[in-house]
Image 1 (cartoon, rainbow, N blue to C red):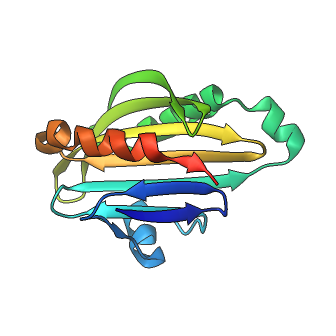
Image 2 (image 1 turned 180 degrees about the horizontal axis):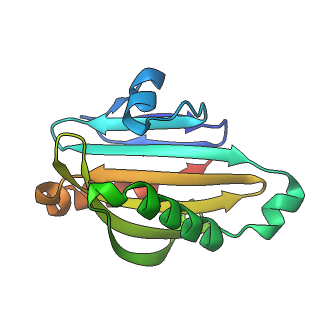
Length: 158
């Protein structure tokens, strides 16, 4: 088991087989130069989990709920992945690190015509919004579910 501290406050534990992704790997995977990203991947399980975070002003933070931010993320993803056979799989509410979190499931076709099953979860703590992105392949969804659930259950604030 390995551990990481994200944004100096969010602790995440993950099992053997996962490796932290370098900033360059994350930039390539997300086609995004955004600096506040941390991620892990397990090439044998075909899993990527990434955490994005953004600090807002106190005022902006009060007006944006995790639910509204998750809906906004889904709208942006559906628009951006239209050409990638994006399919919405449903919304859900859960708890991450003691915070109410809003998420949604979806599928799409990645570069190289590789089918992906995905999940995005948004939660907030104070002025910081965290967004988790989880990706796996359709054929590994069931076998990866215990690992997925264990990682999410172990996330906590330091």
